[in-house]
Image (cartoon, rainbow over all chains, first blue to last red; front, side, top):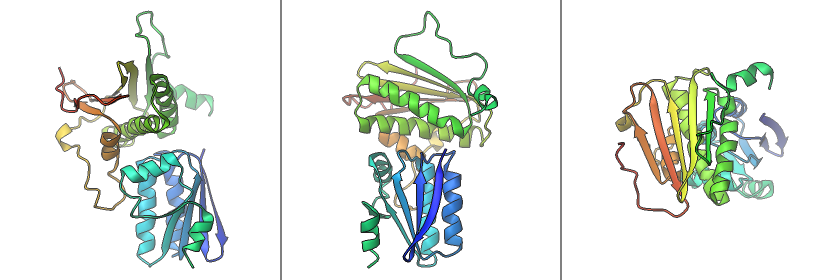
Length: 112
Length: 167
């Protein structure tokens, strides 16, 4: 079962996902992320360090979040990608489209 | 998972190992419920491990099979969660073969194309990921009903047989 939690830190809202993101669970992730973009959350960071598997449904959800936040000039960043998740982004050639950081610290450093 | 959900995993007969069942073959019958995809991934990953694939290659094969199941659920069955999917995976010489069978809306193989990756938008990546991950992807549209997809991955890449004809 997937867990999706949010917390605020400085100017960012961090979305922490725990579990596999696939066709079954991606609607839960989408609900949270799109909820934040509808509120025009200025900085959204998605913590993927506890995601061991992601398929195209999960990638599509993140693409939607990126595009929706872009409509109001919000920032949408990802961090903590493991091998399997990073590979899906690379195979999709989306690793250059997203702002991807190794961890929370480097993601926040990028805001400075 | 309650008993009600468990009963949906198996459609018709239970997992049966026949005397004549080929060695190194697993057959997974499931209904088209996305919550069951994790079970498919676990089975395929383990067979890939037996085949000797690296962790990266195991992930790629698992991803391809997961994406193929997702396409069946979304396109062949239009999201219905109670339709049958039959997956037969076996070790072959120098790799693995996975055959996915559904009984839903027939798909024209000519219409199945990867989308332009420069077109950044949600969705449409599944076919691209399947082709990126596997050495051979063959759509068999000769069956009277439904669709069959045959995926192969080799430990050491052989000649490309992605264009091989269905005999």
